[in-house]
Image 1 (cartoon, rainbow, N blue to C red):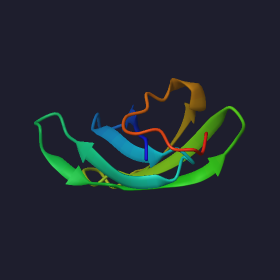
Image 2 (image 1 turned 180 degrees about the horizontal axis):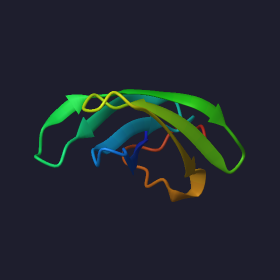
Image 3 (image 1 turned 60 degrees about the horizontal axis):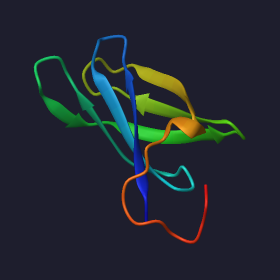
Image 4 (image 1 turned 180 degrees about the vertical axis):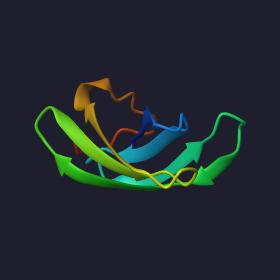
Amino acid sequence: MRTATLESSCECQAQLLATVDEQFRVLGGTAKDRFGRQEPAGAQRLSLQVASVDVGFACPFCGRTVLRSFGRQICSWVGEASSVSP
C-alpha cells in the first residue's frame, strides 16, 4: 500500500501532518510544535472531491479544530503501488 503525508500549519504555528492511503483514508495524524515536541493529533477526512480532499485536524497544543483542503495531485506517494488507483 502506498501512503502520502499531508502537511499544514495550525494558527498556533504547530505543524500538522496526516498520513493517508491511496483512497485518501486518514491512517494517522501528528503535530509538531516549534520546540520540536511531537504529539498525536486527531485527523479525519471530512470530504473527498474530484480534485481535492478535506482533512480536519485537532491540534493537541492549542485545542483548535483546523480544516484544510489539499489538492489530490500534490501527493507524493511512498511505498509499493497497489492495483487500485486513487
